[in-house]
Image (cartoon, one colour):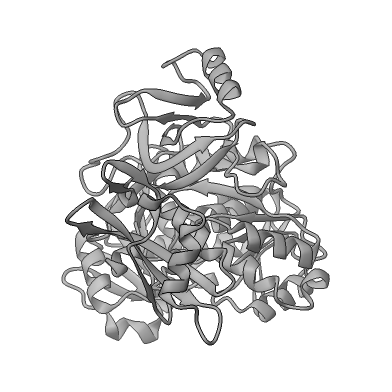
Length: 501
């Protein structure tokens, strides 16, 4: 390899050969053992492939996934992690779109794959068979192709290089005090087919030479038992995990060894955060990012680690600005040349915060555009618009508002679904709410809400309309409220609004 950063398993095996790398059930895999298994698998995958060929992974959070993933990178190939829960049509689309030449899956799952050109490889096939020398890779070579959740239309493959993956670890490592280190035991319960679980979880333990506790299916009680058994010190989690743990009576005792709890991938409801802290005595650091940023962009770890409702500030090495639709800069943090920082800080202090604007970022962790031609990637100066809307509060901390694509225009006025969802969610009879835009002959668009009840009997739509009227301006009030048994969610807990539409 050109640089040890492109092969963190080999580096960790050299520095900490006998230290545990992965804990899975009763199995303990050291870094030396993992390195040896990766070497064998890399040779198997290199046989009959060319540099840059795509290899799909249809596996859960298992040792086999870790071996195959790091072997693909070492072999100079491109890893394409896919959700094992995909339907056959969804799998077929992704495999065809990326042109996968190999598909690594559990033996039992291979029969359900519909392959047009690729070769199916059972995980047992990575332990024996023909081998070849790996194809040398550089930092600028494509390492991972991650398909977005596809909230509208077909999923798109975000192209991440070896350099982008390593850059995000370097950026996080510059935070003081450190978020993770070699001595940490990290719970890895976020699916590895997601950027958060893949790089912030699995990639991070390899970068630091730490130890990962593998969890293939999340269960609140069982994961708390694992945390206590293995003396877990760090958790990489999503809001639903912390919300579930807060309801388990033994949570405080089970989490006593945890010094770092990180939450990302979806907004953490302040009420859930408060309940978790009350139940466990621990606060959760919030992170914000996207697949296209490998994935972390901001965190409360660089601002106020105990602050609720904020996504913090940019990581060291990430430049960020808030921009209006016509290109005016509302706020910036980092190496930004649009306006002087002094003027922006004065505006922020005088107003008590900024107006909402699109988050636009620049950093070495950004993707190279979407597969296959790099479309819609960073511009010539390295800037990329995330499509997320945020504002900076009076402290200079960022607060996420909504997605640009989910903005509702009512008679030309901006209505953010998240604001309506927060109001509905504060009603004692509401367990969850999601708001989308529907066409309206008079106003152009109107908010429409789907609500899951927390009570039996459920609150009536009329009751919820009255509740909203007391807290929202008339143009923000949903024109319709529909009670549903559940909302569609992605694998990491985000509401799939495309399905509602």
